[in-house]
Amino acid sequence: MTVAVPMFVQPVIGFRVWRLGADGLLLPRAVSALERLAAEPWRPGRNDARCMYLGRSRALHRSPRADCDCGLYAYHEVARMARAARAEDCIGGAVAAWGDLEVHRTGFRAQHAQVIALALPDEAKLVASAQLAAARYGVALVPCDELHGRAAAAGAPLPESARPARRRLWTSARRESSDADAPARSEGGRAVA
Ligand SMILES: [Zn+2]
Image (cartoon, rainbow, N blue to C red):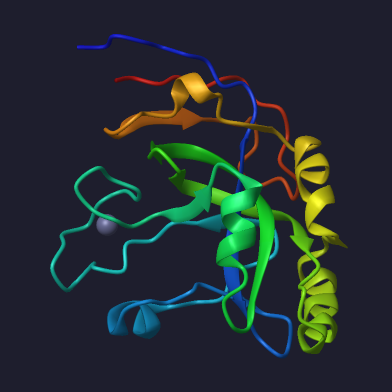
C-alpha cells in the first residue's frame, strides 16, 4: 500500500569515497574479492548502477533493489564521507543521484549518479592525482568544507524526513533528460513506502 508520496523534483545530493588511481581514475572502494573483480572506474557524466552478482547468484534485475546490495552508494552527510576518505589512497566527493534510490539511515544506493565535485585530499601525495581526477571528470577540486556548497548547485540532500530511522525506504528522483551532461531540474519523482 502506498502510504506516502513525497516529491523530489531535482537530483539527490550525496557524498561518497572512491579509491583514487594515480592516473586520476575514480574506482569503487572494493571490500570483497567479488567487488574487486567487478570494479569498473566511474565515468565522467552519468553512471548507471549494475548488479555485480548478475550471472553469479542473481537473475537480471534493475539496480538497486531492496533484497540486493547493488547500486551507486553515497552518504547523506559530508562528515561521514570525510571520515571514510581518510582511508589510504582514497578521495571524497559529491555526487548527484537520480532514478530509483534505496534509502538507508546514513546514505543511499542509487540507480544513476554523476560526480559533481571532489574534495581536496589531506595527504599531499594524493594532490597531483586528485587534480588529474578533477580534469578527467570535469569537476572542481575544492576544500572539504566547500563541498556541500558546490553540490547544492546540482540538487538537494534527501530531507531528514525521507531518511528512515531503521528500515529502508524506496524512493525515486527523476530528471528530464537522462543523457544530459549535467544534472538538471527534473519533472518530479515519487516515493512509496
Ligand atoms: Zn543486485
